[in-house]
Amino acid sequence: MNLRKIDKFQMDDSIRMALKEDITSEDISTNAIYKNYRMAEISLYSKEDGILAGLDVFKRVFELFELLDNSVEFTEYKKDGDKVLNKDLILKIRADVKTILSAERTALNYLQRMSGIATYTRKMVEALDDKNILLLDTRKTTPNMRIFEKYAVRVGGGYNHRYNLSDAIMLKDNHINAAGSITEAIKLAREYSPFIKKIEVEVEDLKGVEEAVAAGADIIMLDNMDIETTKKAIKIINKKAIIECSGNIDITNINRFKGLEIDYVSSGAITHSAKILDLSLKNLRYIDDWKGRKRKENTWNFKK
Image 1: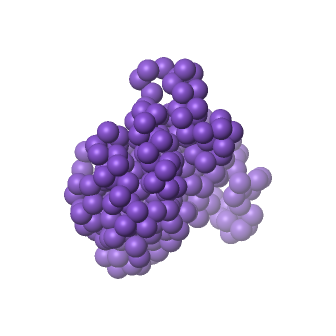
Image 2: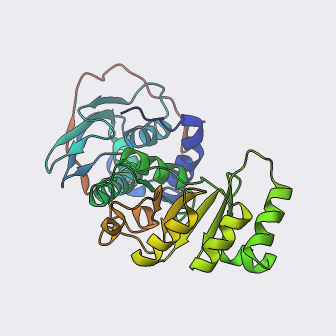
């Protein structure tokens, strides 16, 4: 899979915030039991079938938590995009036992969430069953999780719509109402934006389709149209604009678009309605080949 990874500088601030959310001053449970530094190993298993996404993020949580450089070691048996089955061994971690116990929940939260999105996206692509139509995500993502969730969509075989409001012009119903008409909204957008920016317009009926075509929209989103109306809209557009269909699309109804002459189907469900993939860290054991390595003295100042 030729997939652009999330760079560390893009993920580190978010991960630090997540760690600080979970540990405001100390992990009181772990610190009560473990007084000394001791090396341990633990294994990551899948508890159900799905598509794996977010291993780099998972590992980075432990790396940022650990205060001794290069003291966390990983042995990987799977990679992002792999299909995992129930009870599959995914990865092993070697680290200070306190690091494992204090960081495991945050790491699992990322990996389970991202793998759940990748799994649901893959199911949506398979349900659509049309290689000529691409499945897009939306901006309906968890706050401060967008970079992770949109990456997971790509792992699952979907594609990213605009990342944020700065990426592209998308004129929705409230923009159109504010401008007064579709025609005026497109006119104002063209006057304001660089020529390299495409203009997408959301329309809800065939009258809106006709106006968007006449006004020169680059992309026309057919919002919440039934299939018969969609077919009529396709004829009106007549390849004069890119066609995107959207509106309450999920795994139960996406197949209705199969075979239509459209370019994209966008669905918020692939991020906001995907359940997590059940994963678990198990079989914690101590190992003795860590003797002689010293730990830096520092407290809860996640490595920057």
